Length: 70
Length: 417
Ligand SMILES: Cc1ncc(COP(=O)(O)O)c(C=O)c1O
Image 1 (cartoon, helix red, strand yellow):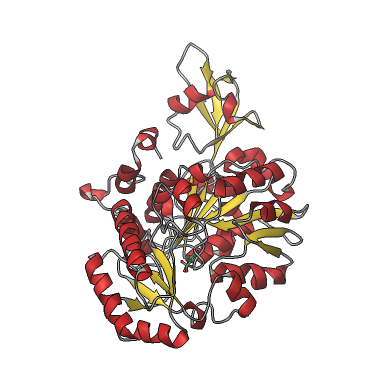
Image 2: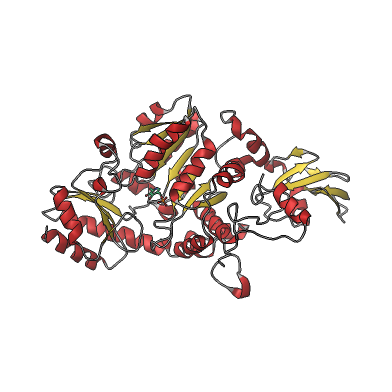
């Protein structure tokens, strides 16, 4: 499955579908308890991480409010 | 903050919470005394600024030493995130300015610490923010004080120096009904006596300069976000983009991205180190502060030169019942007592040898002060009355020395008045 993750192409070598929780784990996303997840430009509710699956061609952004400036 | 750390008990979190292994196996948090943090590529730094990656940029915005302290404080309060600041007043200013705007009203306790009182009454008034003060132990007054403009309720767990003890869960219920966040300054009780989650606070404030540091060696403050308040209700339009993007982290996100960054009241890494070290012994110290204060209160009550003693641990204190229920039979280390007049209070303070005459609380050392002529001297008779400050009053922050030495010191000074 090919995704665009934070602006870069990412290939995930898995047959079965992945929900957001599994994707965070698969991509070893840092500090998953703080991250905001945007799927194809839409911000996901944290409660929907389990029920939302990613599909080939999806664009995913992982965003943090910590570090950084604006 | 790992899931594993969440399961640890309070006294263990004091020591292990938020601490990751340091370089060369260091067991204390390393002091990262660096203003700024270099990154390998332009893309790396762009990703951090865009929020795509976690990373340190600049110590005003974040620092690894400070981050350890923040994680520990969040775990201890049961919150979702924390921001450490340069002082307790910086924590209050940053947290309050994150929420209120010109035209808004703050409903505040009338028995606040003097610095907070003057921030609300004088400084913020110049920016169109109005504070309304009510007796926080009168829940009807609190309920009636909430108006259409109220955007924040602010109280102290135990008022300094009035030592009144509001029923915070009851205030929390009123705040929730009104859709207004409740900010609680828990400096005097610390998370050891009650965690923010137990009290029903939405935001917890600490002057970490006090019991959290524990030795009077550093000034600091903290803002802990319980993640409990709904910022997307429509009552806080300036929170909308943050509520949409960061959900229950909206408050911390707005504070970090705007107010904390722009006001710039960041702690020095060395102070974050001292505070992280200090907090390790909080449970042991608080137990001793509480025990010593109780014994000293009983001693003073039995002394013929002492007119009255105010300590929520005393059974005849009007605040004893609420304090006992909320703080598990512990009443912190602050007490006040009355002598014949100001002159007697001065003679007592000049007579103690062990206790220090200084403007602070929560030190391992016993501290005394005459508030009317010092920390409250800028206030008129009306405000002093609200704060419970009279001319004959002495405030004591009872330390963790051997109680017999504290009592000997007080006994001698009282005899010589
Ligand atoms: C209850 C309380 N809140 C806030 C403060 C302000 O903290 P700081 O002196 O760290 O700015 C103090 C003490 O000074 C305090 O006692």
